[in-house]
Amino acid sequence: MTTPVTVGVIANPASGRDIRRLTTHASVFPTAEKANMVVRLLAGLGALGVERVLTLRDRTGVAALVLRALETHAAVARHERWPAVDFVDLPISESVADTHAGVAHMVRERVELIAVLGGDGTHRAVAAHCGDTPLLALSTGTNNAFPELREATVAGLAGALVATGAVPAETALARNKRLVARCVEGPNRGREEIALVDICVSRQPFIGARAISDSSDIESLFLAFAPPDGIGLASIGGAWAPVGRDAAHGLHMTFAHASMQGGEGVPLIAPIAPGRIERLTMRTCQRLEVGMALPLDADHGTLAFDGEREIEPARGDRYEIALDWGGPLTVDVTRTLRFAASHQLLRQAAAYSPQ
Image 1 (cartoon, rainbow, N blue to C red):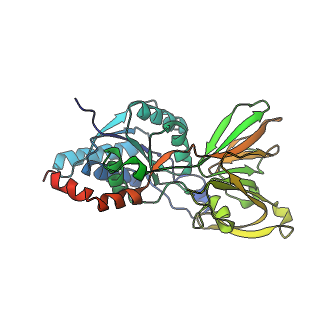
Image 2 (image 1 turned 180 degrees about the vertical axis):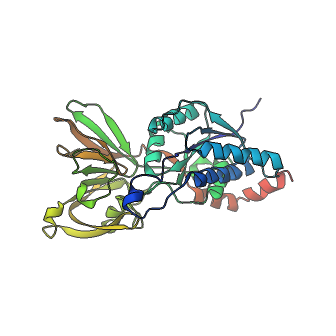
Image 3 (image 1 turned 90 degrees about the horizontal axis):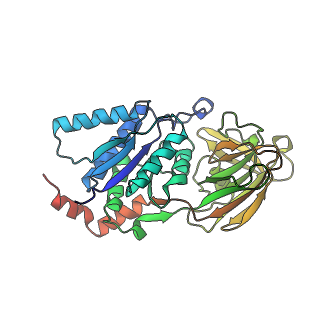
């Protein structure tokens, strides 16, 4: 008996609904649209041979709407092939623990890849547990630098080509960098956290609302990459010294306090949130080489990972930040579909598809 080609789907019900909707003009991703994205993803996956999907239950209505769409699809007997969908029966805590547990379950089930619908924070949570299981990254968050804003139907086709092995991994997949914060001394020695885009030393002494939304909070910034057309904290690096995802280095930047604006430093403006362009004074900027560990001075603030404050360092804690290539594998949708076109894979699939 052959094992069905299986893909995992993580759709964060809380992404795109954080406090920044109240302080900026960011778009909202309602529950219905997330469910619709999952349905469109199913259409793309099923069309090219994915037979089974594992996904999570939730209390906000995403899973319920997907289930309703599945029932409607089955009732009208449409010719499009959709995968069988299994809702994983795990406890629901309505916290990031649901993502951690869901990803761990999918890895144990040996899914071929995991499609992630969320923002930078969701992808960070998935990356912490997915190992070498590839991710199909789709944006439904706020200040997204890591996942792409892409039509889910198209992403589903690319995901299916990867999951079924039609496009080789060396063509379809890309390895990503990550930033690692390690406590090397003090009460929390041994603690380790990762970021896929940025680690920020915030001047705020408490975690509070978590999101970094005011440029005056930013004391220093470590960036894995910095696109020139990005948004969020990575846009600050992109405004001065853009760094690609495939570059063998990142950036370390420091900034003057707001009370020192106009003093020594380089003035920059950057879109740190949708509709919010802020002015900062950059004091220093240096390359962060892969394998280099830099000491972190965070005695009086908090550490934020991919835009959200996570750690209030204890007295005596000393952290180091390093950049490495230990980030997740992700599906390069454009490269995958270009390969499929050049090798006539979609034509072959159409020839063998039932009418």
